[in-house]
Length: 231
Ligand code: GLN
Image: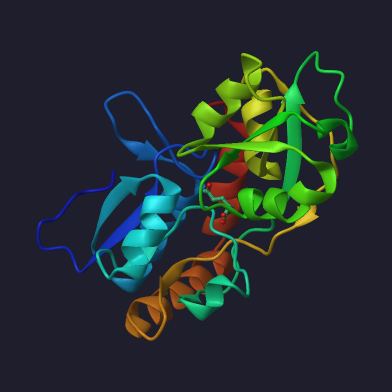
């Protein structure tokens, strides 16, 4: 389990709910691909850390304010973010998709005119939707976490949301009553982030540990575990 050491080498922030990358299980513990990768990497590289679960946007803001040392939260490596953060080698491929309620007649972004779309603050999905908002003429409502965003679509307040494909498809498999209606829009692979020019040692350790767990099969074991298991 992830132990909160008062004297940990690092504080690493993650998202509150972003299955299968991070999610809380009974008893409040965090599990998921990011959590297990970090744990395995820390073990290889002999560092300790305290995990801090925040909204994705708060995690990114705390990293830029030097309040945490790193973020692992299914975070896309984008050129805009590279102005502020240094990223590890990519560890997972992802893209942004549009999802609607199971029985929704909406099939394309052209159907969004005058309607409200739910977005998660500070995410690549939100950036993508903003970039096409003027073209398709929809309104935007922001949420701090994925579950509340899905729920707004589920209850019909919003007609669509934009989310990462691996997260949306995992959620749907595990009972979220939405459907994906678009192809994946490229948003960059996932990487572990530190503040630009800071924590170079931690970044080196992450990359070295990632290479080691890829080489010894641990990486594949973690991915397969979550892609074939239920929440
Ligand atoms: N992958 C998306 C991003 O980097 C969303 C991450 C998240 O919501 N945890 O913006």
